[in-house]
Length: 168
Image (cartoon, rainbow, N blue to C red):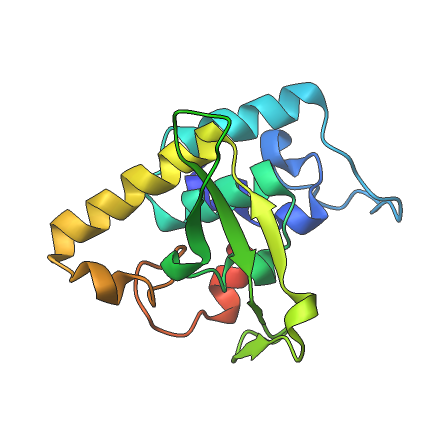
C-alpha cells in the first residue's frame, strides 16, 4: 500500500492499516486502539518517507498527539527555539495558534491568547523538522524570513484542503 493509504484516517484507525479493507464485515462501534505492532509499523512507514509533507504531518501527529486540523494549520513560524539553560543544545517547541476548520475550507485562529498551546518537541521530532526546513530552503531558494509563513505539512502557503486534513 502507498504511504498515503497508510496515513488515511489516523483519527479513526482500524485494523485495515495492515489487513486491507474490512469489506462486508460488521463495523464495531467501539474505539480502536493501535497495538504495539501496528504503532511500530506505522512509525516505520512514516519515518522512511519524512521528505513527504503528509508523512511529516503524520509524524508530528504521532509524536505529539495533536489533531489533524491543528497539524495541518502549523506554519514554520510556529516551530520555535527555546532557550534551555540546562542544556548545551537548543530545544524547540510548536506553538498552536490556529486550526483548519472542520470542512477544510479555511483557517480559524483562537479568539484569546490564553487558548494558544505550546507543545515541546522531542529531539527526534526537532531533527526531522530542522532537516525538512533545510530541504525546503535549499530546493525552493526561499528567503528564510518568508518560510515562517509557509505551512509545515504542505510546504506552501496555500490553504490546506479537506483532502489533506483527512489524509493525516
